[in-house]
Length: 200
Image (cartoon, rainbow, N blue to C red; front, top):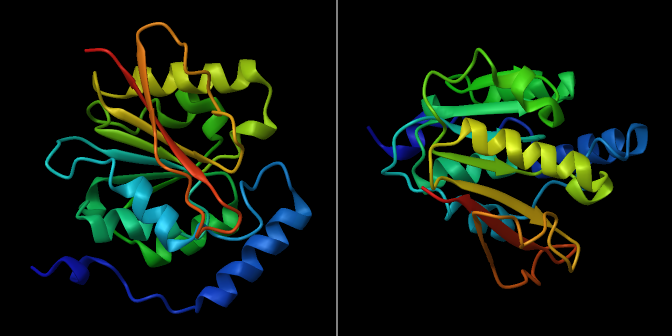
């Protein structure tokens, strides 16, 4: 089966997605990670850290309108493996329409244990996050990464982008390896991808 056959053609142009994001950001600026959906280069950079040969679900936190979701599928992740955790009910409805084979969970990613407790049949092979971490207190970020590692297979990546020049989660966490992409200047605003892995 051709890879693209599992992706429904987007019925709405990118401009509509940008309007949705802007409206959501105006209504709740701290709940939406960006004013606009992630750029294609940023989304592809995030997706490349997911090993498509791995087994288990791939969890995306804060998928919004699906820019990174689409990049994951184009990268080769089977849509059936995707678990999309989205807080905004309007975005959830859109994601269910665009990605009917994915599991869309309407829940709070910052309460990850509650949102995923009965959803994952096996440990996740990767977790990709578009959450606005730098707007949250450090204790909230650390709780999120702790809960993420509890849901991930050993050594599986937690992939997070940020517009900030500093890492969204400290690089000095015990037992956690950290790597970062080059700054993606073509994205507006420029961004960097951080990848965290807990030792096996």
